[in-house]
Structures are given as structure tokens and as C-alpha cells.
Amino acid sequence: MPYYIYKIKPFSQLEKLFEFDAFKEASARAKLLRGSPSAESPGSIKVIFADNELQAEDLLFQVRTAGPRGDE
Image (cartoon, rainbow, N blue to C red; front, side):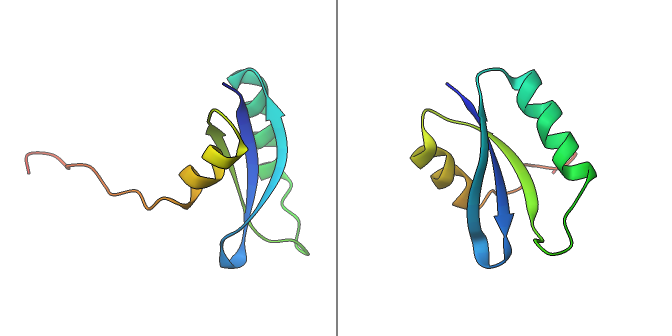
């Protein structure tokens, strides 16, 4: 399964930037992109591991709930 790098723009718009076969390459590219943010194109950079682009976008749209904290 490939690793996808997406830019999440305002109003939850997704833009696929890159696709990699190895996490190391995807992580390095994402760090470079995060280190040089663009003022004219705001958004956050996410790396996602999925079977295909459709699944990656579905996973990015899912709301994640926080796990248990401490002795709760």
C-alpha cells in the first residue's frame, strides 16, 4: 500500500501532492513541505497510508476520537 501526501486546505478541501511506496521518503517530503509553508496557499500537510486515493481521502475526512487518558 502506498503513502499519500495531501494538503488539507480551508473548508476541508483536499489536494493530493505526492505518492510514495516507502514511509521514509513520504515522511521526509512532508517535513520539507511543512518547513516551507506557503502564505498564498494555507493548509496543513498530512501523510496517510491507504490502499488507494479514495480510501486515503475517506480516512482524512473521518473524525478521530481521543483515546483514554491516564487512569480514566
